[in-house]
Image 1 (cartoon, rainbow over the protein chains, first blue to last red):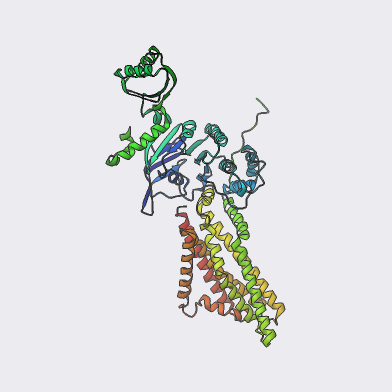
Image 2: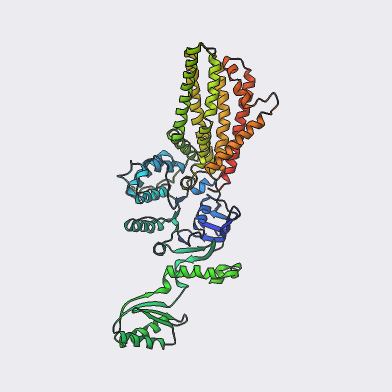
Length: 335
Length: 259
């Protein structure tokens, strides 16, 4: 999608951020987020994810390049743009001495919401995030789960079109995390979202687009399917059960197949790689027939080629090894 | 046609100046509740009471009585100087104290940098000048009733306003330095360097432009009503101008700073 195409929610062009001429946090990042996309922002610590989000929000000014939100240039005084954004930082902090009602009222006033608009809104949001029993208690006494719920309410009070949530499941227990993911799926139906997370299974579950950063570089941008499908196709893992000799015989027969690149057995778990240019269904059918003929049972089969985590790790590892090749277009080279 | 069809909800309307008042009101309340502010008030009252007791003791032991204007002038000057540390701290942490995720949580909403800085600056100025005027009024009234008053009403007002103008300049530059520096300790250091450097330079000003030290020494005469009103207004205007310059520097600088 061209950078100046109409209707993009977020578009950056050669976005660069260098702190105090010492640290390159973001390097020549060009990215577009379409309306309705749920973008998962991935990357190791220090990759530049939070820096990118701060630039999109206008909390930082770029050293070079530009960032446009809803078609307009973002800058520190762009209050009218931020009225259309809902943000949750990594560790939400709250002004001292406030209750949830006071805090949400304050946030609503920060958005410029009139009394007639904000009072009904916060009265609706507090029960929706299950904070009604604690609505009059000081926020200082809240648990991390309650804090997360309050942060969600604060990010939704202005009915934003774009949600930017930085590590939304950080520090949550299993139930709260599940609840947060369900909420994200519900919101994704009507809003554009950018989620930054270290939890790849969360990204896998709720996102449809991904952007991978490594040391300030954007090394992948596209759909999640592209991310999972481009790496390690035809790589499978099978859990086997049966007689040890039968399994060993089966492995020997499988290795003779010319379509099989590698076949490794470790503790009855078979790691199988096929050539990329073969029809995997036919080869798998032959392998399954071989297992059947040798009376070996298949307990479980997984496709490693479609794992987000594997794809992500391989991307980052490959980027680390590129060396001077990074001088050329990293995305084109990596494709 | 379905007569019971509900109309779509109206688009949300936003008041663009409401964020300024939101920060102003919240910061005003939080400053009044802060320990630094309360400590400042307590120290000021202790200073005033201690000074009165000291003077009362001298009067009782030696029979020496200074005029109300002299004592008030000394006390106002002492209060101003002694509490300068508190005032500087309250000013510097106005913006700098919220550095980090608290600032993220506020500045990521529908408020501009300009509005945020102005609200913080005005809030701290209002709190500090308001409390200073109350304390000054208490001192003036106390001396009016305790001693033979040679303090005139207009002189008291003029002295208070003059001190407040100087304080406004200190607060404005304190908020600006706090906003532009990268840490509270650095901000305090820079502030004191700027303050003493300015006082030093202003002491070399030619005759029509009195230095703050000179003006504070003239408080006694002003309290008695022996002052040139136009001159006092000019001096106040200079200090208010310094305050406005400081605020403007902060306004422009903070909107360009990463938070």
